[in-house]
Image (cartoon, rainbow, N blue to C red; front, side):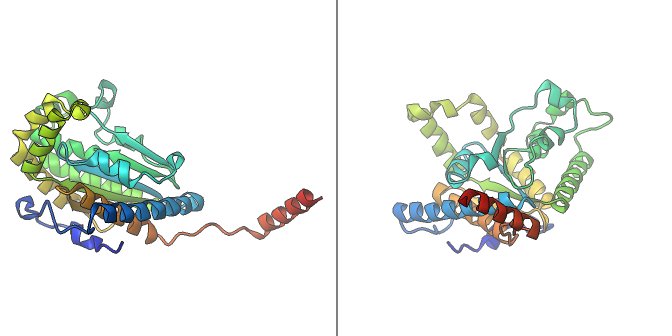
Length: 288
């Protein structure tokens, strides 16, 4: 499907106001059946593109998802990536850091999970938690035991710079990074949290922490605005995906991923003359 993905891209140094940024837009599908057909086509194409990505061995793809609770990160990963080869795709969900992880810098634990060339890596939350959750709850910094570092603007600007430098380094070395912020309205989150209470099969998804964090909604929006503005670059952009409509969000996400891989203009490697002669020798032996 031809979706203009640039509509959702955060421009470099953009000053965001998430209050004026839509969480729902006109859908790109006409019906549920149409949605399924479009997504099926996208997953098949993504499977084919992944195969070329893997065979070429030149690039890796890192997809980062950040959002408030119940925004649909898990569902997007499940549905959009349903057709890819699991041998070449790795999903890592980052929870609260362990004691061992806290003994390293905030980027360290995520760097350990970066995809190899030819692979797709998916981060369900990421090092961005350290300029989002930690910014909203600066008391967490005490656990990180940082030398002479206090939760002022200098700290966050330094972390934005570290992130930009890391992503610039990765881009130079063949990792293409796509960052999705699933933009959910507070009212839609309330509906989804209530649904997790009312539907027994969804009870496991809910924790008291989900309700606790709602109290900090405005602080999170401020943290997201500053983070997205400071860390969206031409090479490693953020995409703000209207997330009140899960189906529409998934179509946008699949379109961005497909466009990113297609823009690499990859192809299957051609056999060298030496390899071609080896193949001909093998053919002769098999035909004897």
